[in-house]
Length: 290
Image (cartoon, rainbow, N blue to C red; front, side, top):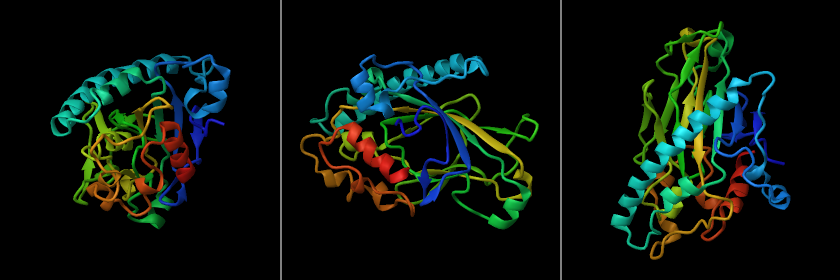
């Protein structure tokens, strides 16, 4: 019922029109094991409000580490959101005061996601060649703000190594259509804008199309990629509305990032209409990708 948004998930998404089989995920809410005890609400909104699932017998240390890192991202994300709010308010007086900061601070439904990108064999590399979405195809995050931990690369024995294939890793598409590789230093955290912020800012902030390219050379064979993302998003009943004085077309047709979407990315216009709540926006997004 939760669309595999809690616990282990593999192969349930579609990216660039294909089942996403090259990565596995573990989802949990880093702040609340049970955001509510209201059974009716949980039944109505299982994607948001289902209780966490922890492998306490098999991997007891996961829960503490997951929550600690996730909550740190939310804490830093709140400070970044405050700066974003100031930028938007300076250009758009009708913007709801401190909206992004309040969203991050008051959300009951932030979602953490551990990501394991499966190793690619030498045989697969020989047959696939250069594939821009070989580990994870292009997409936008649909929440407000996403935190990203630096990626780790592991060899077949589980030893952490330096990425042996310089072509693999995270790539983003800028508003002008240029594709840029992003490498997050080991002692830093990264953040990117999601579609909720694009809507709530009337298009002043724009979501970041991104993908993860797998290895394309023999050096990358047998190597896995590990990372952690935290999706800071509104509560289920938050209206997805543009500020007064902005046109919904400022978010869709007139947004440069929408005009430069990579092939296979479902446009925002096909999933959102002004005034729907976040639960409905999420349902439409899940229907597009699952």
